[in-house]
Picture 1 (spheres, helix red, strand yellow):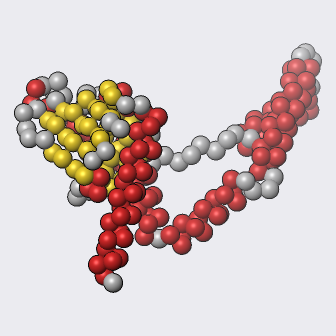
Picture 2 (cartoon, helix red, strand yellow):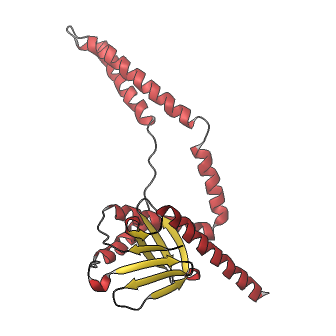
Picture 3 (cartoon, helix red, strand yellow):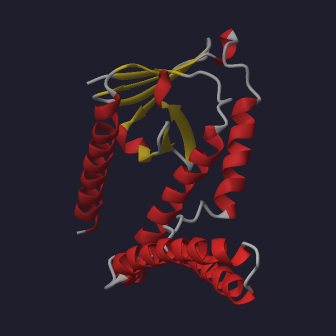
Length: 227
């Protein structure tokens, strides 16, 4: 098992939103860890709201009503606006048009809320630091390697930094990046396009499996030392 990244620039505008999304995942994971009971209740309520009785049916019904009302508006307004104009038909047509548009508005799918402001601000600060570096310069060229023993960071002529799996904390994924947390709350953004060795479909599962395995082993050791 080996995965190798050669870090390139972070100029892609999509990174702004995706880095904030990864930070939001980190925030949610930490919140679930410290408040599991609250999240259990929240998940049940969200599941009930998403699959609640009649939610999809109401949406479909509003869509059908909207189309019918718009058709009726056209059917009524056309003769009403022809000479001689008929005010009553114009009023009914205008009402049907407004009601139809309102029903179609009610039938729209709800857009998920974006990452909270603190996540967006932290993402902006992190990317500002990364974008301030010339990653093509010899002293900044970085290789990140994952193997059965952990992760190795190689940057320019500096000495390699070796981290065992126990030193890696978590990995989060969006469409184009992985965000790895390691050490003392350090974050490493790995762009999927920078993966030069290894299969991207296997990377997430492999890293998470090793992090979880070594975290469980460490927890067991701590438990034995206490007893």
